[in-house]
Structures are given as C-alpha cells and as structure tokens.
Length: 355
Image 1: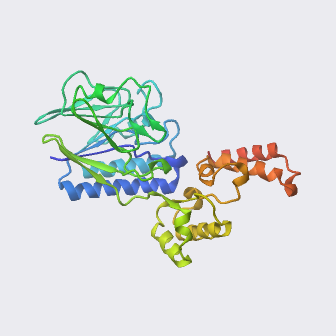
Image 2 (image 1 turned 30 degrees about the horizontal axis):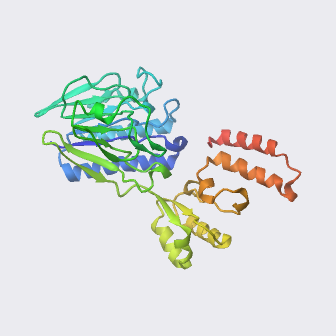
Image 3 (image 1 turned 135 degrees about the horizontal axis):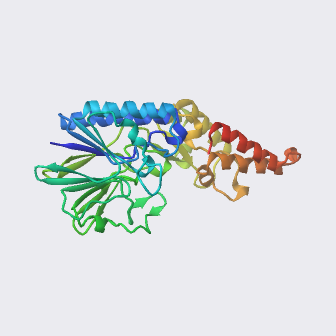
C-alpha cells in the first residue's frame, strides 16, 4: 500500500489573507486528486506539521477553512495523521496546548502532539514525531516528524546551532522525512537519506524556483517518489532587460499567462521609468492578484543608495515610512512633519493588519 506525505500548509498565511486561504484549499484538492491518480485506493496520509500559520491568533474564517480541508482529507484517506509543528504549538518549550486539538472529534484523524507514535507495517515500524520530540533508540523503516536540525537549507542560509543533526537522527533509520523547513531538499546521512519535504505550494519569494509537492511512499518496499505541484500559484521573477525588448502585445500575453502567479520585475542596471511603469500597469491589469502581492516597486531610487529589488523585499510598513521621509525632504512637502507622518502610518497599518 502506498501512503502520502506532505507538510507545512500554513493556513492563515499573510494575516489570514483570503486569496492565500483559497490557494491552500486548492492545494489540498490537488493533493487528493494527485493521490487518487497515482495510488488508487488511498491508505494513509501523513501531515508533518504546521497545518496552521499563527500559533497565537487564528482567524475564524481561517479555522473554518482549515477544518473543512482536514475533513476533505479524512473523507479521501482511510487514516490521516496530523503531526503538531512549532506553528501549531502555543508554547515554545512544550506541546501542552496546540491548535490541531480543534479537530479531535474526527474519527479517522490521529493527532500527534505530545508523544511519539509508532505504526507497524509488514516490514517493520515507522515513528511519527511531533515538534520537540525524537524517537526512542530503536530501528525504524522510516522516521517522520517536524524537526529542527542543523545543516538544512533555509531562506537565510544553512540552519546551525541546533544539537540535532541528520546523522544523529539517522542512527535510528535510513529514511527520514521532516517538515519545518519550507525548501524541499535531499540530504545524505551516514545510514541513508533525509528529505526536507518542503511546503506543498509556494508561500513567498523565498520559495521562488524551489519545487513544491508531496511524497508518495511504499514503506514496506522502501520505494518512494516526489510529485511536483504544477498547479498552485508560483513566485516568478522577470528580468527587466528581458521584458524591455517585448512589444506591448507580447507583454500582455506574458502577463496573462502568469495571471495566477505572483510576479516581480527585477531591475538589473539602467531602466526607463516610463517603460517600467507601462510594464507594471499591464501586469496589474492582466493578473488576478493585486499589485501589493506582486512586490513590484517603481520609482527613482538611485539617490537613496538602495536598489529596487532590495527595497521591494522590505515590509510594506517600512516601505511606506521610507517613502514618507523622502517626501518630507522635497521642497513642496517641506512643511510636513515626518515624525507625525510615521505615527499616522503606524496607526493606519495597525488598523489594517499591515506588517
């Protein structure tokens, strides 16, 4: 029998943004459809943590959307195992209170939150480990969990300063699947291999170009495959120099093709402001996502010493503050008080939940 593994859906991304909720729901639909196509009869589904995004506050609509999707999985699979990740745990140092406890009434849903659970297969057993826990010293066909590990690639570089390593975890099994890290990747251990499963769809610009998807595993035979998600929205970077040589109609066709994706126009060197503005306007008209999610930044920024790409990855609140300070330095706005403007921006952003 084949089983399915995925992780880190993060219902409630971007402050419970509704479009991102829809993306997460569509991803679950894809997981079920792909699993049926490849496995036929659906046996077990393993979710390796971070079903929710925010450990402290979950919006009502987010909770309802997450609940409907966990029920969809439970209707499709014979058994579903939901492991608590760090984003599902209220406290940093223990798993006493978790958000996944909201689903404990579903009969074929198994919540793995306070202790390691062991499942028996014909060829051996597998260990399911919630956040902060590791399996007992024993041999397993596979270890599945939500682990913090040294030596795993993440957006800021390679994780370090953590006592647990792939080799240490690999002493108990030659096959390990972990959540927690959103970038998918394969790592060799002394005994076998560790797979960072990665999020099943792209969350933000850190995921750009990183393949997303799920694993289909036959634990008894030891065979498995990674299935790439080709349907969810992606974060796509478009070099300005490539776009600049296209005619307006060609730009429209390109942006319409990317209508369901997040796009960023990257400035390499020199650019024409009017041409860039035309590109951004066309992109805004053609795309289904609003410009604020495209992170396209336009303006004369050379004097600030910051590149457009550098500025575009700042928090929106900080970008607004920086822009306000620059305005106050211009002669026509010299009467404005930049400190009062910044306070107003903070009040505005707090009310709208803008970071």
